[in-house]
Length: 273
Image (cartoon, rainbow, N blue to C red; front, side, top):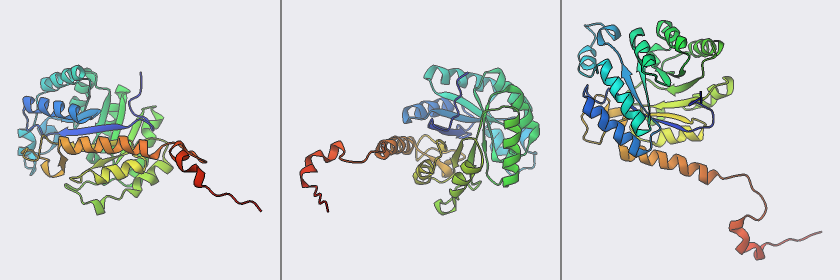
């Protein structure tokens, strides 16, 4: 099986999450917009509200309103396959893990809130699928523990540096964590960005984050749960373009008279002793 997660491949994720408002047709529109914007993948959230939060939780009604049926995810997976864009999701309970495995997702996402929830992580490990984990609020010990566990079980995985603040300010992005984690861990380290622009995500790429996840909405007027932390298709396209241009601008190491300098070569002055 070809691994999707790698240290070299750019992997840009449009985080649909629950921005579909519980509507299948809205989810399809988001997939189409993500594909057109240059996203490599779309990511959803799969859950049964009663198993995710208690009924007196302040977000219970929001989650319930945005809950898709399991059969909807089967339809969305098939639609993504047809559109040649990767579908995956964050499961919030064991039943959702097993369902996503049944419809043959290639990757599982573990939310920051569940980085130490080994009931879900152990179930995901059984599938032998690749895993991406966000690290918001996680201590270095928690990150090390789950990294070692996945490595021990030979699960291909990546970590996403993340600040669990919605929305987050650029100055509070702590991007140095990316460089630090890449140095001490032998696995890809990307970035899950909760700012409402693309600048921080682009800087994360310069620092070595090849996996970037951005919350995604249909447009500036799209009324959805995560609107404040989401970017538009136009912004996502600009991020893709910036990342692609960065590789061109970096170029290859080359000294001496480069092709672009040939016309000015006659002005080079050399004096020997």
